[in-house]
Length: 251
Image 1: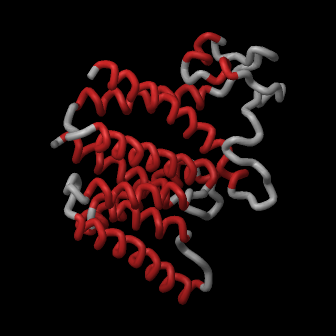
Image 2 (image 1 turned 180 degrees about the vertical axis):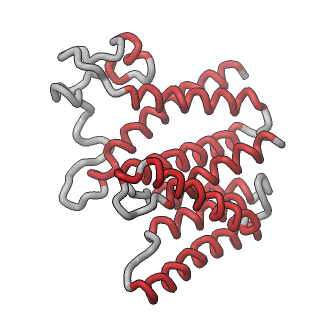
Image 3 (image 1 turned 45 degrees about the vertical axis):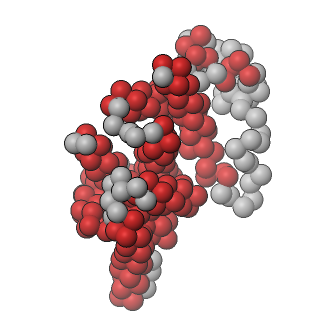
């Protein structure tokens, strides 16, 4: 069991490293005029542009060994990558310590769900963008984990999927009718549908209410970053994360 837990922690750190790169590269990945992917070009120093060798990309360890500086130009490396990797290690370690999951598969599914919601929160916060791929991943994993009734029954999960998408879709249509412009991004529809599939239709009104409050607070504190747009996806993701943590803590 100790060996398995150690392996899961290592995989958690590696996944955290992947997530950090995904967040940074995402705006260029979805740009049709860019040829940036997750594998191209290779990772390089953001200051001097030198390509990083394999041993310089070891999660957590390389940052500590290099004392947070590039091995070539000695300029400081962004702490974002290190913090992101550390957060994923802490997350998987806490989930293992809690020992509330019936199988490693169940643990990994919820780990991926929490990580994906975290990424959606950061993407909307930094770029006012949401990943459709991640929302669909949360949706599928939500249906899978609820097939055994982890958060809710499968009927409630399917109902949450449909209600989540349709509710924001219809609200946006009404807004467009009166204001002649889009009020809610399409990415928010899919994100709320995925949260509905995860938590069930019964929790959607609370998710939207809490998410709206979080989004408003984020907008008020970081207004200069958003012009007149509110990062509603960040609020939805944060409210879903909070509800998940509460549900897990009372299991």
